[in-house]
Amino acid sequence: MAAPVLKTEIPGLTLFARGKVRDVYDLGDTLLIVATDRISAFDVIMPNGIPDKGRVLTQLSRFWFRHLRPVVSTHYITTDDAFIAERIAEAGAAVTPELRTLLAGRAMLGVKAQAFPIECVVRGYLAGSLWKEYRKAGGETRPVTLHGIDLPAGLRESERLPEPLFTPATKAESGHDENIGLAEAERIVGAETARQLAQTSIALYKAAAERARRNGILIADTKFEFGRHGGAITLIDEVLTPDSSRFWDEAIYAPGHAQPSYDKQYVRDWLENSGWNKEPPAPELPAEVVARTAEKYREAYRRIVGRPLPDTE
Image 1: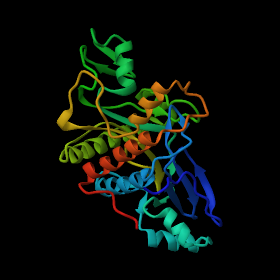
Image 2: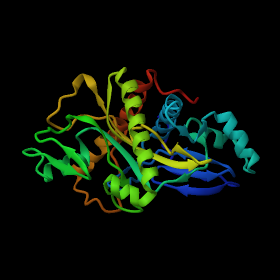
Image 3: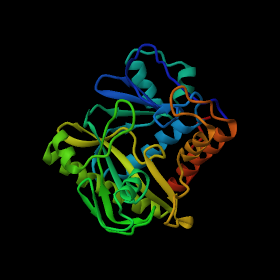
Image 4: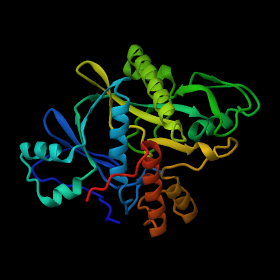
């Protein structure tokens, strides 16, 4: 197993942004987006990464960007390593064999878009923070309204919702994103834009959920990010990966409790039991937790796409 890529430095390129997972470089009218193997939990980046995680994120995003083109414009240009190497060289950076190896399978070229300052979350099942809010509001015994959305009484944890729900969230610079209602989203981005984002997000979720279910995967919920490019609403960042979505195995799905998922829940569970106080610095993940999480990410790719993660060697 190759050593995880925790950080990239490309001399000659301007760093546009460095997020929890991605290092983004400015190539003029396009962005070079490199998914590292960094992993975060409880808003803290772990000291060691998950091998191949960045490749899974990039290649799965590629799959979904291409599949969802009929629904919305996307920022995706290519993940072709040779083409990307040419663009890097044109921007004035030296493309060494080491750099080619570093970027193989984990780099994406995308157009620049002006990002909207909200997360567009769609939930098809009652899980995660929405389940916690539902219980707190008394939904187990009476109908409740959360963020302007009416929900019936008596729903169980992980139960399929009558219709997919659009539950936007703020983008927190630090700490957790905060769930907001459509009214607050309209205040932030404008009423018409918020309605367009809601409609587009639900359309994307429905198309993706139908595609994933063919391979026995349920998409419990997911987060989309959008921007505006050339006047059009454009899907950006990553899409429908284990970092931004909750994937469940349909064969063992059973509402009434939390479901096993293809994501970093294995890391969260270990951290919850480790005694860590969820403040930096985070403890180093044991080898077995790293290996099991890496397998979860690769399995998510295999189940959704229908073939193993491509080899870069």
